[in-house]
Image 1 (tube, rainbow, N blue to C red):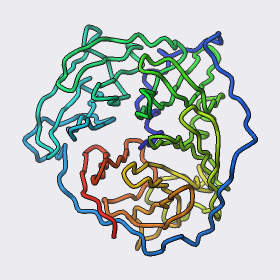
Image 2: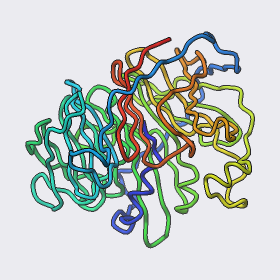
Image 3: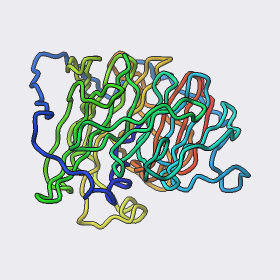
Image 4: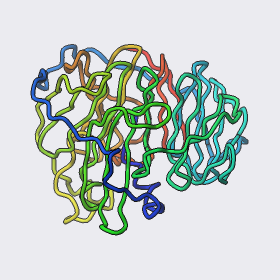
Length: 363
């Protein structure tokens, strides 16, 4: 809901702290050739399908009397709808009730029980909170009232888990980032972890220079049963679909025409003309478990009239249901390092520096 790109914004200061070694903990990817391909044209199954959004409240508004979150990097909700936001700068968690009222703040900077330094990942599994980061190489575990339960020393010393999403069967889907200061090589792996942060299944493995790895990062999300991993491509619109054991079982393909960064993009995104030529086909994904719908942010040609549109392709059963516009605020950049979206029940949560909560209904 990650987007997954935010790891670089948080992790760069700590690259030297997270070095990897080639050891027995590494897993090799298995090549799979037997899977089903679902090919969608740009003709939707239901051209009348759409979403209606109604804004309920905003958290972390600068004008609010609640404590301001200096560096909001991640959020999640518990089974009661309480909202938790991780503040990387203060190494703390802010708790709000389901109506957006501030409840408490817990956690602090340090290396003692319940403490961490510059955390950058956070998720809730069965009403248990997990958060941490590269500085301390451990995970703080606490209950939803902020009571410290334990610390988990990350057994994988060759990387730092990032952008975690609760998957199923007490498994966590996450990205693992590492950097070798001696070779100047980086590595990103995407896989399933258990709640002790041992790798259960490795799904993707990218290695190379920091720039190369960053340019090859892939968007991912999950439902209760499936994992969706987008191809990082300027030419093709493809999403790999894995089952709960991390086995590739299908691929979603959609007709796509390469889209150049135009003069409007270069001007408004402060891009150098030689920096980028074509946009990535897929720039984000998130899932609606209540309706079993996959939302895919894809690139399109922007201009003054559509510059703030938030367009998503909606898939049901791996086939294009419709392309819809979500009325959830400005979306000029297309892909934002701090932007995260989650849907839970009839609510959509959209986090940038603030967190906007919307009621959603089908039209």
